[in-house]
Length: 125
Image (tube, rainbow, N blue to C red; front, side, top):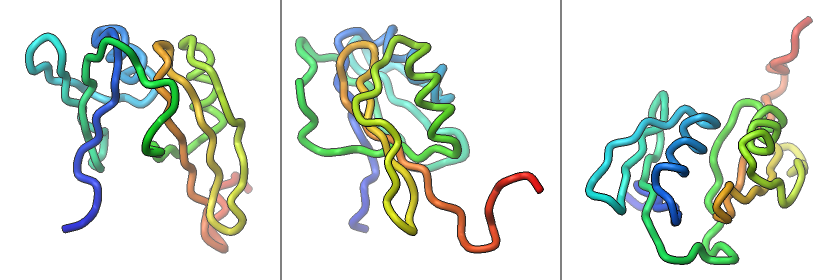
């Protein structure tokens, strides 16, 4: 096994981060003490934890992408939850779209939406 199995997101305020990520992505949480809260992703996938830190890093050391079905809707939800879009939606030809955002405490993460395969537009007729 060589893939990612767990991701930790630094945050100054666990409760506030749980509200932000729970609302936007539907993650559920299980607390382990005051400074660590594990999250699960609806429908499976790699989970992780919110990890309390004194200071959130200004720049990500690793770019972690959250898979979404509707990137535009998630960017709107991020703005509504007082997050900030850093890089707007951009296309990776023949693959999908990405964007980056900063949560309401300063953590930088990325979004990814896979492009539908040929004949699978996902658009209403």
